[in-house]
Length: 529
Image 1: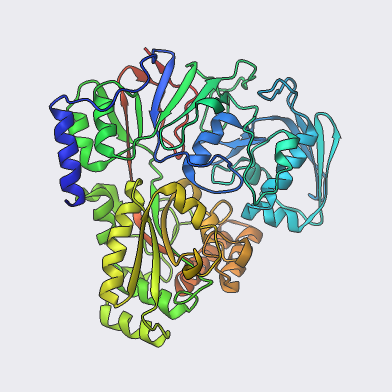
Image 2 (image 1 turned 180 degrees about the vertical axis):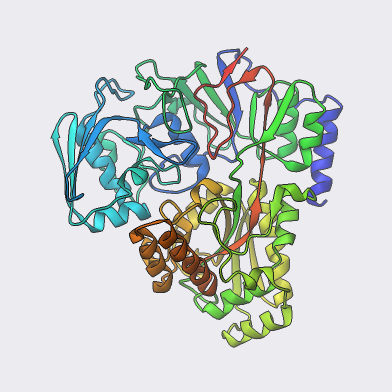
């Protein structure tokens, strides 16, 4: 049974009124029942970069700053900041009354430990750490950061929405090795994580934290007052889209984060359900290659993929035939944003040349060794990309070792640098929110700084040089010039394979209000009647 036949069968069950398995029978108007994009298999927002973990983490942990819908950082946990005239010393003061979920006050030493752990895993954090001279708590509410040279994008680094975000944890938790997972989930955010109700693969629960002190400003993405209008947020893990659709239509859940495009017409026919685009900045599909091991340690093998792949194949597998939901992307940056460009994009936008791609693959020295492909089957975005890729690789003449698994396992295995034959990998699939891909500052996946890079660990000085030029650009025109060079260098060296730009849907019951469009399902401000 193929994907669309399977989805159609599930949709037919929903249309006939056959219910999915019942969720919590105690659900009421004070409980928001939410279907996330994937299973919350692990819960450490610094150790990994999965969006599902980040989306849970924003409920539990707060940040010093938070970006708004203009991607501008605003104060969140801080009361104020001072910058020395030479731009090298930053002094921050925390808001009064901040408390962790264990009722301990948030102190500056908690912030120092949290930022130290975050810096070890985040690309912007690594840049700051490289020029850090001192990061110390001055008193309980004040900390000072001294750098060897200015870092103008400091506030954006502390408030950005892409993972890993600079979450503040109690010092004892933040002292956990950043390459090991935490085992306590205590934050100072608007919700407590109900650890004893967490069942990976089934459910996660968040309880409103009455000790949270929201800002007075109106909520705006990660900025402003994060006021919880419900007592509990219950995550119901439903990998099968037909089951999620049925549960939403029958009122067993209230909000579905990633409503599958195939099922949107059915959902729209239900007068109790509302459907809309989840995020107008959309997403960029990602086909990630491991640069450490053959065959993709050779740039010729990576270029062969770009020459052969068709973004249309990927996009139609992801979102179907509605061309308003996708577009070809001859590069890496979010369409419609100021720094978008298609420099060097002919390798993607030009005619496909399978024969030339096969010849280039042979030239790279590929000798029929297995290519290990990790494809999460419980995440429609990754499953669709995996299906298209397996067909592509086989047409190229590659020996495919296809590992059909779950998103949590991909999250664990992609962090391994072992050879594929020893538990590692050659390819996995993901996607990047358009809000993360407007410039190199928060765009983890575009970096090519070796061990400091995202999974796949590309080490490409030409790419990093253009990233540096962008950070040092004195004006918008210089930024645009650096970005054109970056797009070209990233394509020539194939940092990763962009599979296209696409929009996705979210859906919710009409008795739910306050749902906003954005890269994160913001639960604050959402209420039920």
